[in-house]
Length: 332
Image (cartoon, rainbow, N blue to C red; front, side):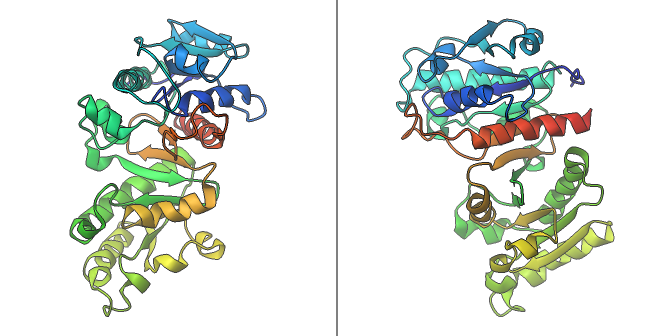
């Protein structure tokens, strides 16, 4: 991957054109000055923006012109025509448009023509219907970057909390089988390296949650903490990583507990996402660790039910753009 030029814009894919992606990206551009956002380039279909917004759009063919256009209009690279777009009414042509937008935006970041990648929300069911075989955008971007999906780590980040789910979109009944010492150690190493490289934390502190209530209660409510989690923590400490745990999940997310660590590794999806969304529903960011490029996304979905109604908050998109820019600057 080529190194991005300092002036390279961020590439922001619109996501599903019938979702809230177009309107929150447009709203982020409107608040570019008050939010202190750097130049970014939207990738998608102009009609998806026009369906929800009447602001100025500068359609470009060269991403190098985005910075000069950004002050007066939202720069956009147009992808193939997806057909009719109706906010809140997803269809298969719209899913193809979302995939084309993601592919192009990812390619710009990989080539160094964009300083980072920010992805708008997509509908996984719609993508699956057109043959998209990845669990989500994270795995797609990882493959395009030549990184194994197992080495692409999803972290959810807000102003006061960062969490990493060790297992994501799997049935809860399968989690105990999937949690291994090797998995914990691999994700912890990637998280620690990324906190140092992308967030400027010289000596990252990690906290690891238990799987069972009360972190197993010394083996009386499960032995995963004793047989799997604690050995991984001890091995990580021997490598020089600052890590605590296993911690009871019900007491590790209050304000005083959060002050003890920079990121929490959690055993399953809801254990990580419930506290993050409870604290930072409007400004939570999904960032993929372990990639050669920076990739962020707002930590919410397409919200088809409110698309086009003027109800969608751009807070998480603004936070995702800002975080991508900050991380890219640290890498430079």
